Image 1 (cartoon, rainbow, N blue to C red):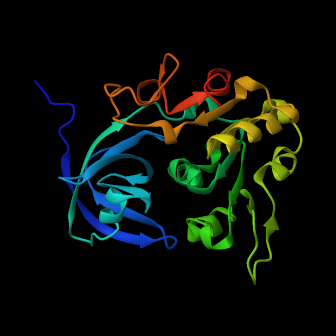
Image 2 (image 1 turned 135 degrees about the vertical axis):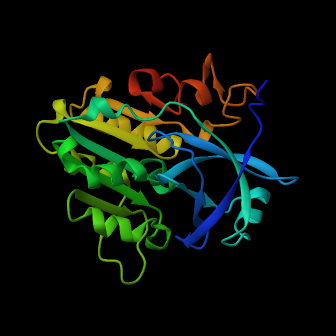
Length: 263
């Protein structure tokens, strides 16, 4: 019988320092996740945590990990050539076929950009699969911005609106909460657009309401509950919200389901 908790070793190919607390690890692996799925990352005798896949190609995946505790502190001490352990992928990701030939808006707050980065990169390579892609991204400060090189690359093909809650000296971009810019992201023909929202729960709640205010139908919105992911297989029960197991039925949910899961 296969042990569903048994992880596999994965060699660290490279580490990219995104911010002072966020590192992206490229791992050698045959895992081929769908867009929006996650894996369990572990170090023996230290711990395990669910992490969304932030990029993937045949032979490797990337995980963007924030230093927030014992396990992630240990992960940030690893070097290229070291091994960590992964199992998965898990969960239901973004329904890409429902975005085909549609205008798609992706709204991401903070580390919420990581779970959608792989999907954005896919559309960068296959721009003809959507009618138009607009990116609305918000971070606390300019120093917290992730994937700066990717964002500049995305500007060449997509409409990009990047904002920070609090500016720093030298910042010349937008300032304000992401909800302040939803109207700009929606533009015209809102009822035909599809919207993905990923970020902290309050950000997703109020950003969803703002999109609905500008005539995006509820059935055209998807949210990712990555912060509720836990063991990946629904056994520990920590991912449960009411009768819904986020690890099994999510982390990506249509808004018509997700609105009953938001606090």
